[in-house]
Length: 361
Image (cartoon, rainbow, N blue to C red):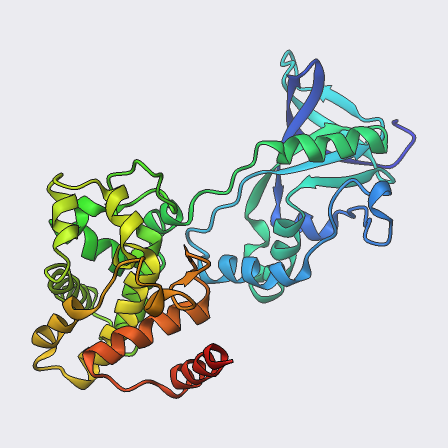
């Protein structure tokens, strides 16, 4: 290989499944300088990777640009479709220099969107060029092996639940608000699951953090002052007042009634109702800032039973099952607003009118 122009860089050599692999630290600038084999024009069966989704790149690049002091990326996984030479450093058998022919093909098995986003981010933040990212290199001779690597790398990948993503997100102000409301409320801390985004039938919780996040975001829309403490206090006061209107919630919290029984029987113990109450609550706080607490008593006059198909079918329920699509959330909000004596927004009225016309056919 000495007679062939090579690209050389320091690596750590490892063994996995009796195959050598190498770990390197590449500067972000190298992401732009190293030629990566482009497979986009090939049919799926001849590619080793899915086609790059260019719509994802601005979001990932924005993440780097907006968080230059604390962004974090996991290692890229790259196959080298060529013979290489590992030159150990002294007596070390794991540390050395990897020599790769200049005409070798580099194929990204995992991280093509990260690489594309890094290149895009460098256009706006060239000072990031000297920062580094870990790259794991596998020696890959042949398409079949490369395709198998892609399948294996993604086989056990499981996206974390939305709730736990929100729980660990310290950049999202709305997530911080929802978490603060829950953790500062002795009541909601007991009935909100902070980790799961869907509740198992035997769960002792009534709501998920993701559902509570949606409800809080709608509640404080255009009302938030920007002071997290003040905004969280307003939201906590509202939700604790709401809780007093639903005795079943307290019975679940106290262990006197199974959460599953309440969820099976009533609309008010589902995320769609929580979000709808948040939407209606936003209007209530804006239009009646002085007596909103008393007006919440109207929630007790609504028949929340799932058996009340006359009210809930086509709104919160579709075919007897809870539906959380946007139209159903609005239609559920309309029921609550009507009970609270609140006017509908133009979009809400339009959807309400369309639904009534549909029901009359």
